[in-house]
Length: 289
Image (cartoon, one colour):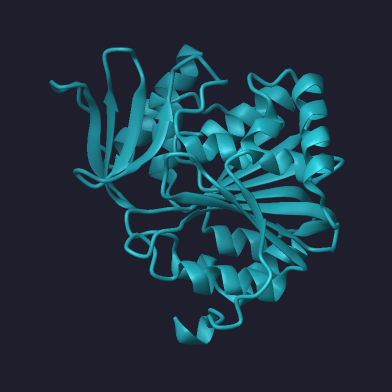
């Protein structure tokens, strides 16, 4: 363990990062490919990752507690587990503090999980300040998410897209061409789960993004995240004709089988909506970026 910490620390220093234990709970502040990154810790030991001086929280982690999902949308995103019957391989695009992959690994220890982030410095921060740790079945890749997806050889059962930067979702991760690549990287029975800002001020492209998902996938659902401006988007490559009761029953079964710290079916209560018609919004294309 100590050698792992030393290895991460040396890589952080060599990458030009700047660590600090300054006052007011600041553990780290430095420039990354995503811009300024800050790691803070409150009196309860909860650590937060932000991009920008006063940017929104990117990740909230309790060191040593892999069940702690500090941001509402991360907990809501786990509903994706109920949209597929069998899980062998998971892809997570965007590491943040590593909450999603570490939670999944805790409850699905035999499942292979690939975690992709364009910024190796963010991966290093996730290892040094948060709970993120690799092993034989959980592997990180410092690579652009689109490049990784376009070169996938063995498809995944679940893909989580959580690639927010201070400026929002990178546009090349929202176009029709990218969504087609994700669809090709997914098993037919699988699902794609995307975290998306749903307010016009935070994300002016919200409706075009949804329209683009609807263009590529056979079924698209949105799940409202309580007390947040996020929505979780669930995209399915085949028509499953999901019923709310059937989904809730499957979610409850998973909660028991995998000893989850909460009832997965309760995440459906804020509102699951199947997208029917967004023909009035444009489709996002690479040629328009």
